Length: 109
Image 1: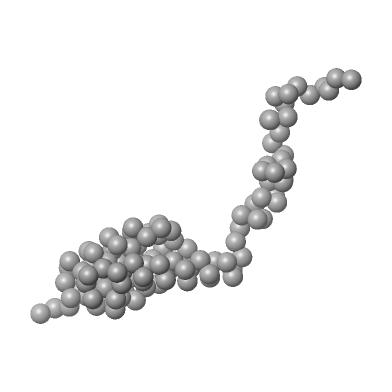
Image 2: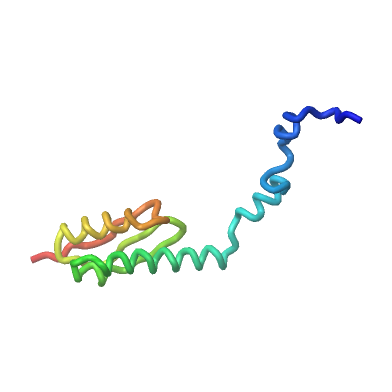
């Protein structure tokens, strides 16, 4: 008995995704729950804070860091424009950061 489907036609099915799951199932699994999102946000904040703490500038340890998704917001007071630039540059190097919002203020005088 011969199948009516050619060997190639089974590769072209559009209603089934990875491991035989439907597209709807994949989409539901892909969307994260609020608990997972919160955990990821806290993890990103922790990684950014840890990375800044390893730099040789002590002023970077006093920066407030907020993360939501991949967006990281830096707030606080730094001693120089160099510290400000360094903080932003370091944040961009952390895995998971997609955008850095610089709300740092440089101390005067």
